[in-house]
Length: 170
Image (cartoon, rainbow, N blue to C red; front, top):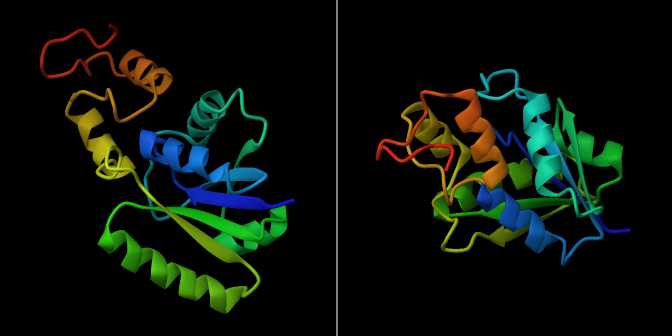
């Protein structure tokens, strides 16, 4: 079985992440979405909430599993039997950053291979960091996140109506 780990903070998972996972399913028998718990970051959403959103997004796809982990990504990949790490690239700076991580990972475990998929033009500008800013400043989330996450965010942040005055619950 070709199992891949798709690691990230997914705070929250975006349409860009969803796209990479769906496309990755054409390459791998199973994808484990690993929610990395980074002790140096203060997340906006709890690990449980992030896991629930990802599971809901892939509720009809048995080949996508979701779990949380701490520590080194290559160690976690080895622990779950993943020989591959799947990553998305949006831009040239992403490539440079990911290349350095890949080189470090190779020095830690040369048996784990990283696969990169380029984001589509429609999602190449979307990042969790930018989405969190849109949430903080009550902007439109449509097109950035799956509808079930948008619904939950608008319910959780009632003052989070989009700046245009449109109802956040529409």
